[in-house]
Image 1: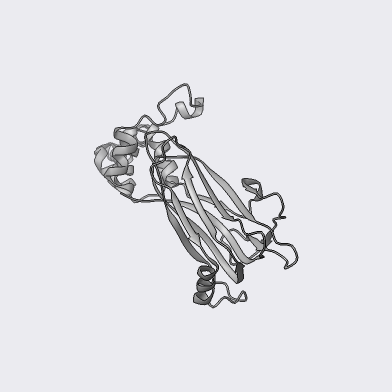
Image 2 (image 1 turned 45 degrees about the vertical axis):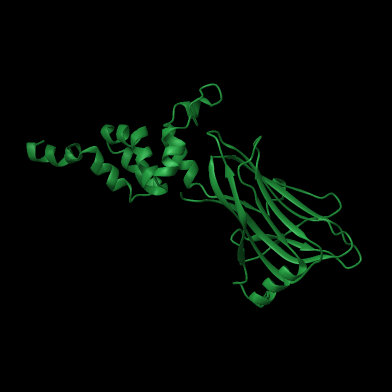
Length: 264
């Protein structure tokens, strides 16, 4: 092999770390993993805490980096972590957790708890982002209270917008319907809460001129913000409740609920 060929093959060694950091800022995680397998130097560099800490600052801002990296002990307790996690780069684990979409589809019935009087089923819907939706539908003869609850596991500290994706078809939701989300902490910092009346459902129905033959009738409803304080992950509970057992709950389709990290 000539000197010129050797130089061409090892040109990456001439780039300083900061340039590789900048280049990788425009790559996907999969691309970064492929690049890290090209040589031992890049494998070491792209699996370092400094590199993933840099990406966190660029993608999510200084405040989130300071909270989760600079002053946090997340993913540093060897007793509470598995062997696979212990071997991994701490800032990389945090970055992957931040970029993972925190979403629970209502069609995943095993991930929800429901009131015991009602039978819940998922139904196919091509306009759903998941292919199936949860349809709330009472008969006029049998009316029950409504209580749907789920939990997001091991959510990193931060402030999150709680978003419901749903659509309406002749909504009959008399009484107050409450949407609620809270972090499982001794002293929760901020809880999400929204209260809808029948008029709120009707106004949204009229706003979207609901016709289920169309596919663009879904809307995203933020019920507020939930904040996880401290420096440890915790669970977030989300629920939808209507205690009116006299009137039917009818015509509401639920797609998913999501926690969206607010950039600080």
